[in-house]
Image (cartoon, rainbow, N blue to C red):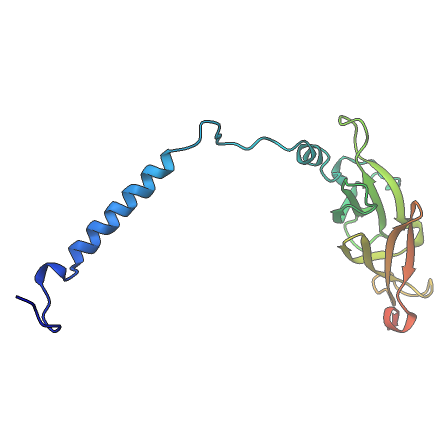
Length: 195
């Protein structure tokens, strides 16, 4: 006897229990496969010597540096920092903006480039001065993009301007060229504002 196309046999109808049994069987196969591994498989990857070297040569910590700034009895505050490979040698340097601690006012900033020493037990060292406190300028913003250091500097047009209210705003950048950091200002119309 042949059934017509419209009739279904009861054992060919998928029911929820059928789907549950199929899902359970599939889960068991996947779980069993996760326990089967090649004999040389390990849970931890073999460390890459270059990655280990880079990790050991992490960015210099400005908190461990003696900066060339005389603050008298006051401490030096690190107010901004950014790290990256500034000179393309494969190790990270840190740009640190520091100033003398003050209970009021805003002392002038110094901006320094720090590098790790060759002796891993020694403190990081200052390898370049981008801005000295003697220039009587404050760093408002510090940005590191690739190998370019950018900053917005606040200063005073004359000594008569109150120290609370810098009236000259200048945007500058530094880049590593020919073995040193070269400073360049943005065009005067775009970078200098006088209040």
